[in-house]
Image (cartoon, rainbow, N blue to C red; front, side, top):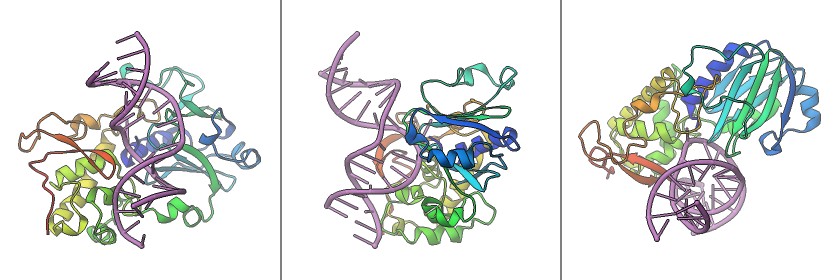
Length: 293
DNA sequence: CACTTGACCTGTCCGC
DNA sequence: TGCGGACAGGTCAAGT
């Protein structure tokens, strides 16, 4: 599921409620979702105070008063939903938007009890996890964070940065390259397809064969689609919900993702589905031709 | 080495 | 209706 815009939407939601709260208990019925030693949980997770909610790429990072940080990866089907202990929900949401009316449910893997509410980590496919690591030196010590590429929505993320990272993967397909989290952080299958369409680049084009003009358009497109998606609360293809349990609406505006059989909004040609970088991939075969040297 | 493919899981959908 | 297979927002390890 969750790519950068979805994870950022979750972060923004949690940011409203969690900072300042203290953790009362942590439990799981699927230990692989919470691969933390019990002694460490007791010493540095329980009774800790939540300081802030951060995000790096698709990873949620929650620094605690104990000097440790909670790391959460939602992978394909993870949800992170907060429910206050009293009052009837949050109000303001449309009832039909909620995919998580009664929590915990059968996909709930980890329950974190807080002073004023409960944080549920749900994950149908069990790929995601909640970990705990030392805050000091986290970005240097954590294998994933250490290699993670730059944040594409930061002001200082330049075309030069994008181009020079791509240059290290000249022979691979452009889709595989932008899905590679070491090239840039946060792009997943939805935003790869949408941004490649916007830039009129065929996903199987080799990086070295793509013109500078098109790479520039791709850089702009990646930032454009992900910024727009954050404004729309992300994409809810199946499971995704934000911290309040509500869906995002970006897919209503998607041009090719899951639109096979429909018409290209640019030329009217039929959108087709192919395979690229081992993933289902949506293109307009008329607008997106494989680049050749 | 750089790059691609399977594995991790559950659930849903589609064809026979 | 039942059953097998393909497929689903991600990332690693193990292949080629």
